[in-house]
Length: 326
Ligand code: MTE
Image (tube, rainbow, N blue to C red; front, side, top):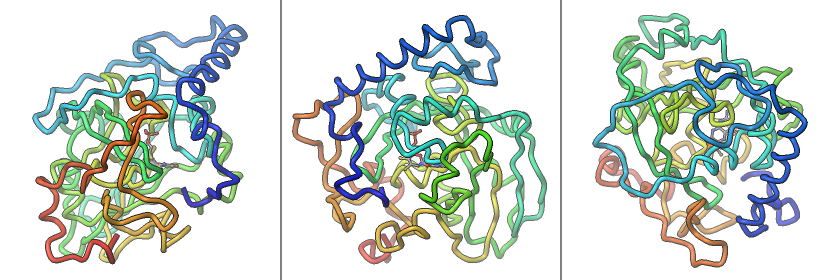
């Protein structure tokens, strides 16, 4: 994203994907040999195993009722979803979050609710998990870097939480903050972004039925590298809006700061809606490569306005110039 110059482009982005994955497999097998027997039990596992989770069945189950809002696209294989990540607190290489995020402590965990809201309080993660019925939402996710995935998230609408905490009439935006654990998050030592990672939505975006709090994927709790124990998922926006490992949700009168906008305002706007007609200043956003599906030498597929969710969300932006308010 921001920090990449041609000289920084990661090997994961220039190596044909199948070769790249085999490199990971090789490293994982080597790690597994050294650490065999230290894996955590399959059920109820909260602390995650040191060997990266690369297949379902290793984490606690978290089923969700299938939602009519799910996309029908072919799902991205679990292995790709959990080993090709952006979570800069654990390093900027796509493989690093899977390698290092098992250290993240996800219990005890609570999410502070504050700002322009009547029920200011910390909510324990166990209570947050029980707050509303879990649904499975299969969403297309489009990263600003030009790749996409289709992920079966498990969670419930953000609106369920918002209703219960009773925002005041002044609340027009919501700011989200990721945890900072300097002893587990190796990436915090790098001045890549201002830490903690922060993101935000306008209130009507946060209330939109497509916006969910995600607690799981593929019917299990989130692997740490995907943002355990709770993250945001807003599928019509570039992936960086979907902030991971949330510890604070703040209701605000004015637009919150967002990490990538603070880092490079001319490259990353507050809205960051997927829009093939608005290029990133350093690359086109017209096309994308679907991870696990599109071969490296295959022509890229066309990116759709609002990531294909225009019918549902275009109304949120009526009258706005999406080229200026990108
Ligand atoms: N949240 C935090 N706290 N830190 C990050 O670096 N990366 C973002 C977003 N949320 C990020 C984050 C980006 S750039 C993307 S594309 C998605 O997470 C990736 O989510 P995934 O790894 O589950 O696919």
